[in-house]
Length: 214
Ligand code: IMP
Ligand code: MG
Image (cartoon, rainbow, N blue to C red; front, side):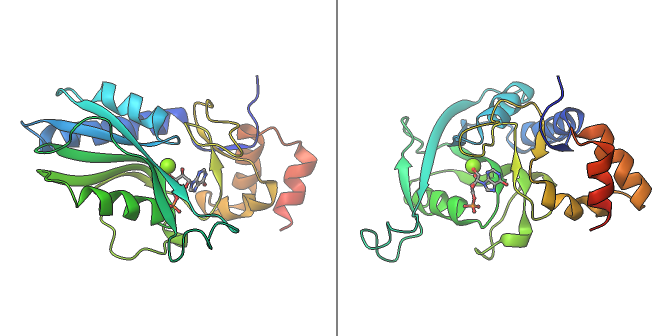
């Protein structure tokens, strides 16, 4: 069955990124307790694949962050985000690796790191499958393990949602047809772009012709 939209990061490419990150983690953490701290919900699929690809023993815990939405500012003055779920196990004296699906503005990761700074940890680093630097608001974030950078497009799949749908798709996809023009730089020519979109999407040739006109 054809999946919606167009694949931006295919299953094979994701697998290669996960494997590469896992090898680096095995080399970087020879001993001591390592906790993979997944940021719910988006990171769940990346975390389960990464945990299985890492050879050394790891512990698993989760946090979640609630972004303050329009209308909630009055009750939370000066806050952009709140911790909605704290880890359930004691993390003290452990190495902690924050596992994210995607770092966009950076507000979520900043909130998590600010909390972790209050604990007695051996080390804290961030692993993210995707990095979307175009919209970064938080400067100076160190993302030690990054699968790949993506352009400023909204993506779904591989754990990530649009209004809670699409999380179970096995690859990272773009749904919004208007945004396809952003992907042109992944190909060398308009013809490549058209055939690539046709092959990897549920678009008709006519629609692809329209996109090419952009
Ligand atoms: P940030 O706080 O703006 O860095 O965004 C962090 C969270 O927003 C990520 O962990 C994702 O869960 C979600 N997010 C950001 N960009 C996307 C996207 O393109 N698709 C799906 N979720 C996204
Ligand atoms: Mg996330």
